[in-house]
Image (cartoon, rainbow, N blue to C red; front, side, top):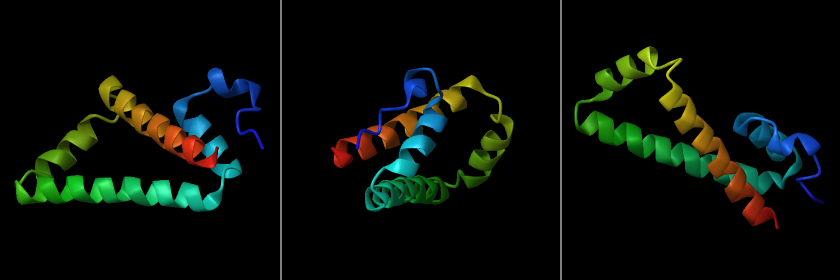
Length: 90
């Protein structure tokens, strides 16, 4: 099975690539990679709480909804997930 058979892979967004690959890849690998990403999120939230920055974080999240930097970071996470899944499925 080649998960790159979709001709739209190079012209689609990182988010759509992730969801396309996540549907066709080994589900155990997809779940494992999502779990690792949620663990990273939990660690980041814990650090923010320990430093008393959770309110600032929430405020920043609300204000950055259309921020290009946030979109770039989100795309980077989707790209990382796709790379991790593809590497483990080969």
